[in-house]
Structure formats: structure tokens, C-alpha cells
Image (tube, rainbow, N blue to C red; front, top):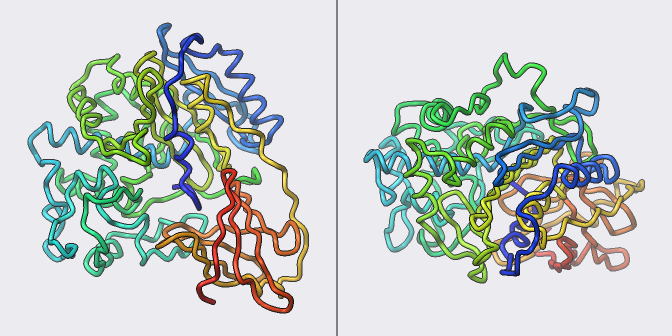
Length: 462
């Protein structure tokens, strides 16, 4: 649930290098990273790190529950984990296959009401559960009838009726199984379909099949009384408190809340260090793989597998409006890492997680501190329009009152702020836009500056 360009690129380019470092960082080394990220860089309010290694498991934390709540975060602090939920959804799928209830090749339409008529691509191939679990369904990142009433909680009003309306009206542009396209819609649909098949709600299904068997007492969607005093408040990139997210009908894509201690229990089982009834399912989710990018990464069921040989890691990240998360492990060293933050900055926690799994992978540099200037909102009309970054991937710039927003295809809108004439920046992601504006005219193009790349985009419509 990240914005603009995919943020997996760095993680997908891990290369095989010699490993001569200790198998995991010391507590002091981890605390130094967290102190710098929170106290110096101001990139989070609170971060919790969980580590599994040859010595067992431990938690290192720094920061507070909220900007205005000085109580410290710890291994029992509850965070939104965003798209890490997808690994749970994939595990539910694998477990139901192991139980004989469904097959990976089962068309998802068979699990939905007969009134939902999913249209097939030209060749007639149906979308299967495996297609959904590997992001090969051909479904877009988000449905085009998702128009949030509240941008701070964008999924909340996207209910089952809207999901079924989209599915019945959507005409696929390509057959499933051909191209990888990360899809929150696809995983939300998968979670919904599995819940229907089981006769349980998605939350109850996670509880019965995963949380209870693994002893995960604080993993759920609905807030619990026992979370009082332990639930972190989410913050935006400006370190201001923000709304929690309700995922509506798409819970399987990112609705879960959890703690570092619970996710360590999950990792113990995923890494094969703890045997359970889910052991066959944990094995199965890694057995199904689709190549990604240049072939140095693979999409398993839920998990992403990056790198080759000794440096290979298995991971997933997550992000909501006020939280960032990372869960991963490195099979060659037996090290597992959980990182949870109660702040939704672009720096996030991915680099911390990867660095703790492989010290050869550097931490992200400190972000440039940008300052917004005041411009006459009337000048924003020069920038409003749609700009093409790539085929089927546009960036639409529009005005809402005295504020300016940018929205990429299939993603939620992001407010942008002026730092110079014709140059704007986002606070929630490390991205900037420079507009090329002929004298007295509207912008002819823009350039998106992100991840060290300059991506030009001509205006294609007003």
C-alpha cells in the first residue's frame, strides 16, 4: 500500500556477496539505528524491532506510543501491519488447500455468489486463487469504483456491494497468469473468497486457523479491551496523529493489527523453528514461485523472495496511513526480523529490516528536510492535468480548494506542497514534482523525482 513508484526495487536487487559478519546485530547496534531514525532524523515516533537468531528471540524498541503519549513502545505494542496481512491470507489459502477444501487452481468465481459474474479475458481463462495469491490475476492495484469519502481512511466505505459491482463490470485487458501486477484488490478478493468458503469472517478465520494455533494473542482486526494502553497511534510523515484504517471488503489485503511478539511467533513457525499444524502450509507458500523483474526475485504465495544463494531473504512489508511494517527472514543464517513503526514515512522500516538481515545492505540515507513556501493557490491551475509516466500509468494533478494533490493510477491521492515556483514535494513519500511551464501557459510536462531517478511525464489531458 505504498505510493507512486513501487518501493520493492531495492529489495528485489539483493546480490550474492560473502557473509563474514555476525549473524545478527547486537541490541546496542539496533538501538543506535532506532535512536538516529527517531530522535535525529525525525522519521518515526516509535519503532519496535524483533530479532530471531541462534540465541533465541528478543525485542529492541525506542520511542513512544504517540506524539502526545510518552509511554514507551515495546514488544506488546499493537500496530497496524498493513500488507503484511497478505502473508496471512496466503497462508490461509495454503492451509485450506492442505485440508482439501479447495485447490490453488480453483476459479475464484466458484467461491462467490452466482450473482457475481466475473468476466474473462479474450481467451476465456478464469482467475484462480493462485493467480490472486501471486499477483498474476490481471486485476488492477485498486478497483476503479473506489472513491473514498475520507482520504484519511480510504478503504472504509468500500463494502462488499461495491466489490461485487466492480467484479461484474470489469473487463480484463489481459489474461491471468501473464504479468505480475501488485494488487490490493486481488488480495482483498482472495481473503473475502476464503472467508466465504469457510463460513467465517476473515478475522475469525485468521484467529481460528493461524493466531490461536500459533499462540498469537494480539493479532486481530477489531480493537480489544486488553489493548488499552498498548495500542500505538499512527502518524503521518509530519509526525501528526492520523486515522487508523478500516479495510472494508478488502481486509485480506491489509487489515490486521499485531505486535512484534506475535509476529515473532509467526516467524518462528514460518522459518521452521516451531512445528505446528500449519507446518505443511508454511512449506507450501514458498513452493509456488513466479519470477519477478530481472529474475533476481520471485513472488511466492504472499512472500517475496529476493536475492540468490546465501543472501536470499524472504519478506513482506506493509504500510497504512499511519504505520509501516516489515517481516522477513534469511534462510542461510536462520535470522528473522520484525520491524514496526507508528509513522508512515517514505523511509519506512524496510531498509532497517533488510540491513538487520544483511549488513551489506546499507540503511537509507537521511531524507532531505523540505520546507513548504506560500504560493497563491490561483496559480495551481497551471499544474492541473493528467501526465503519463508509463503506458497505463498516469499521474493526475488536481486542486481541492486551496490544496494541490497528485494521484497515480490505482493509488490514493497525496497532497503536494510548493518548495519553489513549479516544484512541489510530498510529505508522505520521498518524491518531488517539477513542472515545465511555458511563460503564461499551463504545464506541458512534469518530472517525478523519486528513488534517485528522474521520470519525465508529458501532459496527456487537462
